[in-house]
Amino acid sequence: MPENIDTLLKESRLYRPSAQTMAAAHIQDYESAYKKSIADPEGFWSDVAKELEWFTPWSKVLEWNYPWAKWFVGATCNITYNCLDRHAKTWRKNKVAIIWVGENDQERVITYGELYRQVNRCANALKRLGLIKGDRVTIYLPKVPEQIVAMLACARIGVIHSVVYSGFSAPALASRIQDAEAKLVITADVGFDRGKVLNLKQVVDQAVANSPTVVRVVVLRRQTPAAPLSGPKEIDWHDWLKDEKAVCEAEQLDAEHPLYILYTSGTTGKPKGVVHVHGGYMVGTYITTKYVFDLKEDDVYFCVADPGWVTGHSYIVYGPLLNGATILTAEGKPDYPNPGRWWNLIERYGVSIFYTTPTAIRLLMRYGEDWPKKYDLSTIRILGSVGEPINPEAWEWFHRAAGGDKPIMDTWWQTETGSILITPLPTVPLKPGSATRPFLGIEADVVDSAGNSLPANAGGFAVIKKPWPSMMRTIYKDPERYKTYWNTIPNCYTAGDICHKDEDGYMWFMGRADDVIKVAGNRLGTAEVESALVSHHSVAEAAVIGKPHKLVGESIKAFIILKQGEVESPALIQSIKDQVLHELGKIAVPSEIDIVPSLPKTRSGKIMRRVLKAKELGQDLGDISTIED
Image (cartoon, rainbow, N blue to C red):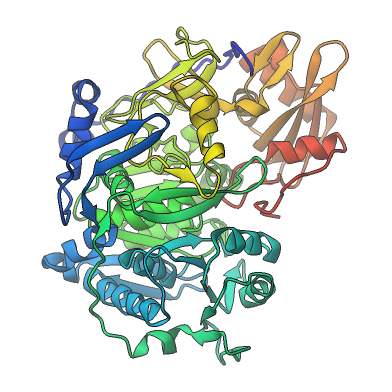
């Protein structure tokens, strides 16, 4: 494992919250709130849990048998009771829960009362098929409201949902269905992407042919005339629900009852089924949504993720609904039909909270600042970033493009952590490119491979020192793989990310530990070199890898996407190298730069550097089922 990773990036800009942001915030003094939460984390999480409704209370907040945790021991609850019934019993029954916009601009608006009824009908339909508590259902749907309805309906009766992003191939879908041993698949005839029609049903047919546990397939038909169903296993979504009652009691479940399995392989190999549970996950997603985005009753909250990823689970579906928020969700890409797509939606619906990814921000940067300037973005209060470290250049652009005075919540967390762990709150001063400080109740550190805390500005491993409620409980059917997260560094949860803390305790993520490049005895994180490359005025996106080198151990090779209108030339390549020299010093200057039209990414937008490296070195590409293109 790499030791003492060099920190080259120097970022001195500081943005303080406005008086208006300070006055409105749920947490006005982060320092004292954090100290109090760390002095008694169980007390802190217990107080948060009491803001939600439980069928029976817990006898113990945490039972910790390293590395296995149980939270809210003995309590019973149901996450959907808190997402739906809690609001449907109040004036919120007529509040808008979901605004959905299709790629063709079709709009659907669903209130909390209507969502409650739709979920109950779907839950009753699941029961009618004979599904019982603990069974698994695979949901392979595009970004449509039925995806959310199906997730909640499963959870309502204690069935475990496994959402698979609708861009996955048939073999990738089949492997996930087979591992979960799903009895039912819920899909659609088609999805839409940049004007193209994607035949999802064909993919499911191929996957189900190799999945003997699947008894039925439910198909949401979006096209007219509707394509015929192709066998006795298949049922039309609307026919399936139309005669069901709109009342279905939420199953009273143990707090540790599994809520979902989400398969992640991200930037590494074989997909692993991360298991989250009703109780702790509910508490973590509820409070992070409330405090990080400073959620208020009249907010319109727009998260651009897909529920096929954990960001969609936690911050489109569960976190916002637990808080009774109004969610805007949109099918399609940020630059289709034009690069004003998201800015237009923000203006049209008066969006106040906008949560996106560094990849999407850099994509929009390519088209320049004239696009956001065309729209009235004055309703935005809070911005958010998720998925990978955001380089200072993209941070500054996003800040400027969205109005120049809106705080950016640069959030660090993972599928495995369930909810946001390291993040600013709106009242914390911001440094572009830093995920800032741990969330309340979270004890984070930067350590060496023996678990010793490192001094300021020394690069090491990001770790979490104590369990937290929304942590995964296991890897499905693979408890040994789960243990590696806690056994890599003694007594710590190791995320696999490298990081350094500055003098103020702000955390700066520098890339994945497996992507560290070793040049002439120096260990460099990919994020810093990529950040320096993107700070060049012609560069839209960059990825770097290390290549074996006889003299210096590894040399740096960069793959770069240029901004629109920029043309490759030897002078431009030299100018980009000079920029890295200026930003980071000689050691970090790439010896090779390739200009490329695109980069291999997971479908959630993370760059797959291992694929670039394998391709460059002529090696086997490994599992690339999560790759976008």
